[in-house]
Image (cartoon, rainbow, N blue to C red):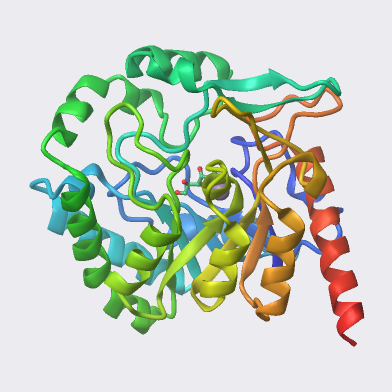
Length: 354
Ligand code: DNO
Ligand code: MN
């Protein structure tokens, strides 16, 4: 297992690489060129700039989160083939710098969705929160709320430029039902697989978050069955998962540890996040500690350990603690605590095995 930390880049993150360096065990930075629009080619020069920054601290850059997928690819729009060619070029460029895993998602219109980005918890911290009834609002109201709360940070998938065209975006997705979306995902991956073999890069899809349809938009990767279907659909060792315990774990019916046990060889990247369920279907993100939430963090870590997991792992969203001003879910402190928790469990499992 290789421990990593997501960082949004100089000038785009409140956290410095010098601070991440002091978290025990982190060897890789999970990064992206956040200024690029979906469909644009990432050039060698742009990638090299990040490499030079990371080199200074001895960090690897093996995992990109995310190279976002253009809506024309998701909807089979007129630019699909052109944007797939651009994606291939980006993969080839990334592979020159040691990138091994590219995380992406195939969610229509939005990336992850929460109704409250700074929900107060009883201990005085705040966390991302999902209230079922609030999601029934009009998506434009939702976007307005998210943009007002992010306080100047752009959230992937919720970029103001995209949100300005929300009505048009929804129109483009109108004819795309769930089966069509599956077909479009298959087409995309079958095109990419030869380039993945050539470059040694694994494509690792992030599940849909929350794992159910919202705003009438279809969602694909939501449970064990859909994960099975996805892996069978393009049965290739380079077609992999970013297994996010918090995304799938938001549905109490999903047993994330079972999915890890079944597919550990196809998980290229693990996101560890804990979530607490409420009886009415709402959920709150929590600390990484097992007993603070309901996703079964200890079982999940053990499943990775038992399976000899050799991929990349990172703490996913954390709470906002100790007054930290940061991107929603992506502060330094709680994610650093999460890392120490994960490593504590992992080291003990190693020791017990000896
Ligand atoms: C939340 C994050 C996601 C992820 C994208 C991948 O769990 O991990 O926003 O970055 O969905 O494209
Ligand atoms: Mn995640």
